[in-house]
Length: 330
Image (tube, rainbow, N blue to C red):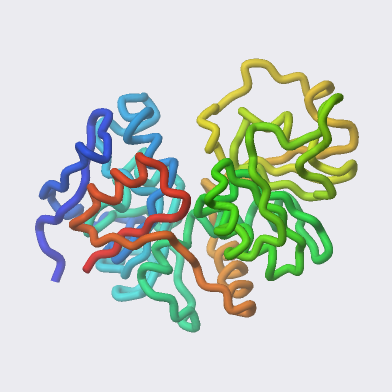
C-alpha cells in the first residue's frame, strides 16, 4: 500500500551536507505518462552536489527540488505506462533531480522515458543497482561510443579515483585494454592498481612533455579525461597521434573554456569528443547489462549508507570521497 507521506530531502537554497535534513512531504500521485517508483537505493553524484552547492536558484533548476539523478527500485504505481507494478527498474537523467523531483526520497514520480527495466538474470543487490545507472552508463558510453575502445588499445584515465574512473577501469580491462590511471593523491595510487589498472601515475597538474621535461604518461591512443577543461589541453597532448580523447567529467571544477583555439589547442591528428548521458535508452542499458553479465562484472562502490543517514553521506561527499557513495533504504 502506498503511503500518503514520505521522507525526502527537498531544497530551495544552497544546502551543504551539514544542512541537509530529511522532511516529510506528500507522496506524489501517478499521472499519465509517468510512473511512481519506490526507491530502494541511489548513488550520489557530482551533478547533485553542483545542484546543492551552486545551481539551486538558477532558472534551469526547479525552485524547490528533491535532488537525485538516479535510483534503483520497484514500480509502485505504473499508471498508464507499459510497466508492471512490482517490476525492478533503474532510473536516471533526463531532468531528474533538476527539472522535477529526483531520488533523495522514499518514492519518485518519473516520466516513463527515464525508467528502465532490470533483466531477470541480473542478481545484484540494491546497493549495487543503486551504484550502477549514471556511473556505468557514462563509463560505457564514453568507452564504447565515444572512444571506440578495442582490445589492444592503451587507455589513459585521468582523474580515475572517482566512481566513474573505477567503473571505466573495470569495463576497459574486460575488453583486454592496457589501462594507465592517474590520481592527484599519492596514497591512492595503490587503490588504482587494486581496481585493475596496469599502471598508476601521480598527477601533479602536468602529464604531457614540455620543452624541458619528459612526459609522465606516454603510449595512450585512447584517453578518458574526467578532470575537464581545466587540464584538457595538457590531457590532449598525452594522446598519441591518431588517437581519441573523450572528456566526460568536471572534477577540476571548471565548466567552460575562457578561450579555446581548436587549431592551436587540439594537437595535430588527435580527435576530441565527449559523452553526454542525459538521454539514455533501454537498448543502451540492455547492452551494458549484457556486457557486465557476460564478463562477471558487478558494480563497485566506496561506501553504503542508510537513507536515514543521508546527511552523513552528503557531508562525506562535500569533503571529497574518492569513490561512489550509495544510499540504501533499510
